[in-house]
Amino acid sequence: MRLECRVEVELITPGFFAGAEQFGPEAQKGCDLRSATLRGLLRWWWRTLHAGFVSVSILRRLEAAIWGDTECGGAVQIIVRPLGDPVVEAYDKRNKANFDNSQKRSNYGIPNSDPTKTTQGLWYLSYGMDEQIRGQHRRRNYLAPGMRWAIVFRIRRAIWQPPLRNKKPEEKVIISPQQVLNQALAALWLLCHFGGVGAKSRKGFGSLQIVVSPEEWSLEKCKQVGRDLRQRLGLGNQFTELYYHSPSIEYLIGPIEVAFTWPDIWLVLDQIGFAYQAFAKRYAHNLEKRALGLPRRIGQPLKGSFELRKPVKDTNRHASPVCIHVAKQGDKYIIRVVAFPAPYLPDLSQSTKFLGEFMKYVEAELKKRSSLSLPQVSSRSSGPASSSSSSSSSPTSPYRTGQEVKAVLLAERTKKGGWKARIVGSSLEGPIVNSNEVPADKKPGEEIAVVIQSISGREAMFRYVPSSPESKRS
Image 1 (cartoon, helix red, strand yellow):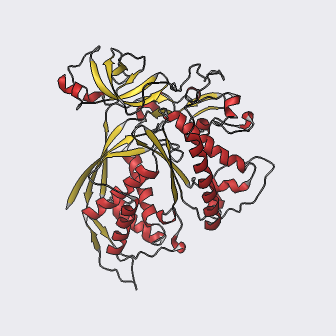
Image 2 (cartoon, one colour):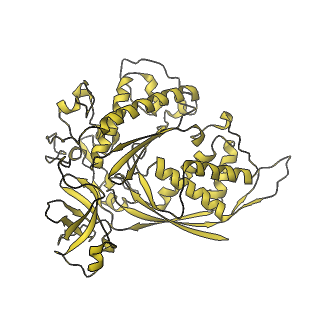
Image 3 (cartoon, rainbow, N blue to C red):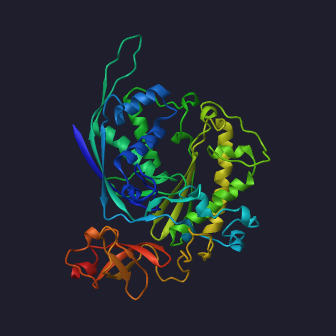
């Protein structure tokens, strides 16, 4: 009557996590992936499997049966367990990417643009995470890439109560624990393939990747899981625009995928930001740019037209229909972009056309940028929040992410007591994200085998390799 399933995921891009406090000393404690956060995201991606196939009222009843509502608990319990020590840092955007005016006009920025009206790509994507607000500097904390979690699903059966017909209740239908688990795993795959967690998750931050799973999944398998459940409950599998009020996998545009071989994830995100901004500049002062989500400030003089419809007209708010995800394959970062046409931005036809243009343009931009060599990041002072050190890794660096190397354990520890290490014969050093797996008898000065998790300037993050020949000898 009950099932349990364990999946491991890894954070590929920096994640802006937060609890009740987003800024200040207390915010660092809440910078972690929580079950409640994950649950909400899984519900959203689960809805994309069924939106457009059933009415809004039926979709709500079905969601309550699987995930629960205010009246009854759901059939899916989620437990999130960290694997290793989290590395939490205050976000300093100027120390991650900071071009001078000539670089902003180059192929790394936006060619022939006015540098005074061009925002650094990384800053464009992460707007609001490191800003001056009413004279006060506010920085969000981020969780560094390489962190892993075990996600445990505990599943029980669910009960589907069909709506009344002719004022008579119909017989209840049992949804087996395996069918419920399939719904949860499909939602997790969609999140870890197209989405992200935390703030700015639709801009590439907080991208997760499944590293350990009991079975292989694909987009088609997720769709089939949705069809199987609707057929089991007699809901039908006919998609209709009449029911299309929220994002649906059936209308998904993309994905487009572009590979970057650069080792520094911050500079990869920087190029995504420039590509995104370059498209937006094509619609400068144009109201049609609202199709990328609201609220959006558009300067005078206004051009074009964009007639808002309810419910967007009442709130002037709508999440971005574009989702940017970053995956990792060996030493490559794979940029994956999808878009969900929005029926209220301003209508399905115009939204589909505009997003199609966006996807085509951004794909071409990313392909051009991925062929460039790693840029040198300028270090220049821009006020008290700036850093004078460069955050780019050297183009001639002999190291790359995913490479196994020998490192020496350092006496200095992380704030949470985790190990730090330095590559033998190099100045490259940083924390070991799975310090709990380093044998207890290890001491500072001893050599161990590690895998380079990420590189940023003179710093790196490592993952201890318990099964390596070196560790076995020790």
